[in-house]
Length: 392
Image (cartoon, rainbow, N blue to C red; front, side, top):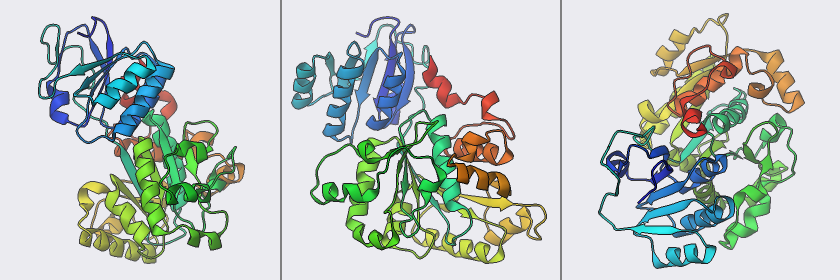
């Protein structure tokens, strides 16, 4: 039985289980996550006394890695798990942590049955997010959006977040950051080729001022030929296993195997366009392609207009009429401030958080995480629900 007053993190990919688990009113569920990778940052934040785990499709290696982290960072945390394997029980014993097995099929009842009491957010599972930022035409500010969106998501979600620069012909995501390390994707190709297990974070660059990690592309365009499609598939699998949120900056030209694979696997697709007529035309073609791929455009694709200005003859309503879809938001033209932030290597959401550009980028992050941040509100004056869930 979980002791009274405990603060529990529920780890399950079964929404029905999350909705029906019963706890004593004194026990508080501090969060409910659907991926093992999302547990680590929440445990790092502290305030968790117990883990309650029920996973139907988890890699045992990931759970074993989680147990190792628990033993290292929060050894007093008790792990309750539905039907753990014998190897996981041995692992827990070896690490010296307490693992309490729960029988498969039985819903745990701890103390008095109180389905809705003492539960702050158990009705919502936080799944792993894979966000593709794409535009079928170059020069619209796609990489700018991807880099700043990565920063926003790492702050709002309070989760392990990775930005992958997959636009290997230009690979200029690094210019938006003042990076402290000099890693790139070529370093991990030997590991991917030999199917070796490794921590992707060790080969990523750290961003000052936020918890975002960046995986830069090859240092020169000619080296991009070394990254074959098979490597991309393995890299995506590793990234999705080890990070709660992955943001991919896709190349703007053509419809390569890499682009199609990322689009198909995406939780969200941020399609960046502008008021330029030729860009709008290419965006229409991109929407047609997505529909032919079987992607639910209305639910999965978020169309945004970058560098929006009221002086353009193409108003927002005319752009939406031409595209045949509603845009999520528009990011205003602010060339001077944007260029200054790039020259400094500091994303504009960090250097100028109160600018309308930054406010709209944070609003985009809120849309992806299904948060209501309000229109025109500065992040400095508001605190998102996501962070409130895990602060106490």
